[in-house]
Image (cartoon, rainbow, N blue to C red):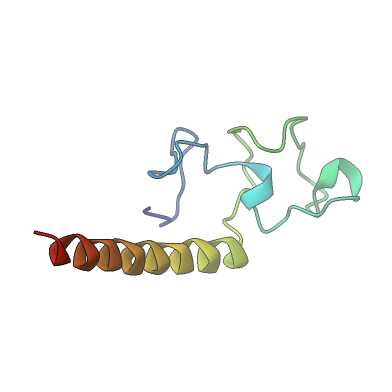
Length: 89
């Protein structure tokens, strides 16, 4: 998954097909605050897990680290499966 910024509204996860530019992936996402957003100038959308046009969107560093880790884990799992399959060919 390419998580390089800027992330456009139409970007989707290569694995699951879900939107990437969503409030829940933003560094300003703060559940419990006004509109669940820590940026006072933002006008947050009602749906936090759908793509939006927010000018304040910035990919959360924790999300970026999580997706990078998931990529490495997927690569390890694929390599293990390939090695296992090769035992029986």
